[in-house]
Amino acid sequence: MTSKQFSLEEVKKHSDNKSTWVVIHNNVFDVTAFLNEHPGGEEVLLEQAGKDASEAFEDVGHSSDARDLMTKYKIGELIEADRREIKSKNIEWGSSSDSSSSSQSLMKWFVPVVLPLTLGIITAVLFRIYYRSNI
Image 1 (cartoon, one colour):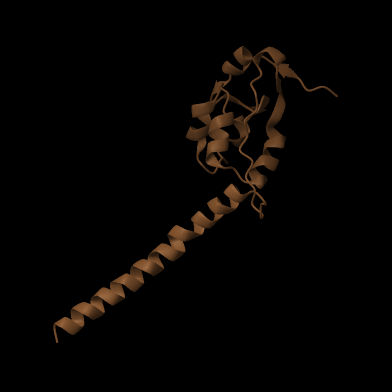
Image 2 (tube, rainbow, N blue to C red):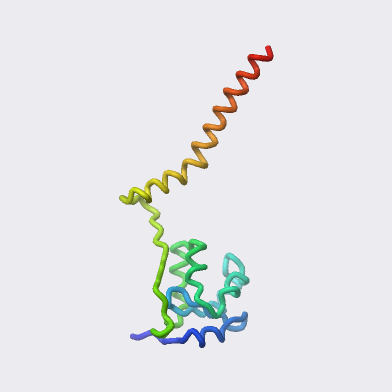
C-alpha cells in the first residue's frame, strides 16, 4: 500500500495550532493532537510547523519510545520532488567496535568521574601542605 503524498507547499499550509504538520525524514506527520502532550511544550512543535523538522528532531536526541510514538501521527510522505537526503544521527547505546565511538564514550565518563576525583585529591594535598606549614 502506497502512502499518501504531500508537497512541501501543502505542508506549509498547516503551520498553526489548529492544524500542525511537520516533515521528519521525508515523512509527513499531523501532530495537532499531540501539541498538548509534547514533553517539550507545544511551542517547540509550533516553531517547526509547516517545515522540515528533521534536523531539529535529531538535534534533540529523541528516544526510541518517541520514535515509535511518531508512527501514530504519520499521515504520508513528501512527493519525490520535495524530498531531501536523510541525514540521521545513528546513536549506538550499546558497545561499539568503532574506536572513535569508544573514545567518545570514554570522554563521557572522564569529565563527571575522573576530573572531580583528581581535583579532590589535588585539593586534599594542597590543604595538607598548607596545614602543615601553619603549625
